[in-house]
Length: 102
Image (cartoon, rainbow, N blue to C red):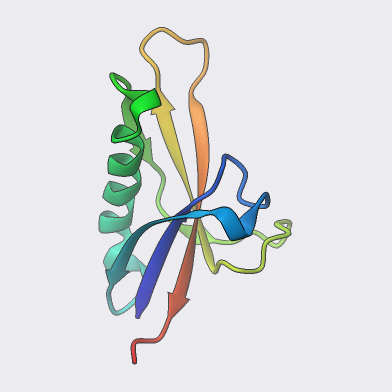
């Protein structure tokens, strides 16, 4: 299977056609690529100039919740930026499409 990772502009349901391609991973199932996807999200956030000097992390992918309006993605992830002296973390939604390899 092919898993394509996209970064949203904060909210996965907003401006879906403008989401940014971040990475493509291949594996037998989502569990096989989870570690790579988590690293892809953390690296993507760490390389963003506005988050320089901040720690970054990501949560494992989950099936898209039925409450989401977006229908493009089969899985969603959340990346987190941990600013050193801020009252709260910055959360960014990521979407993942799953397609069969051809």
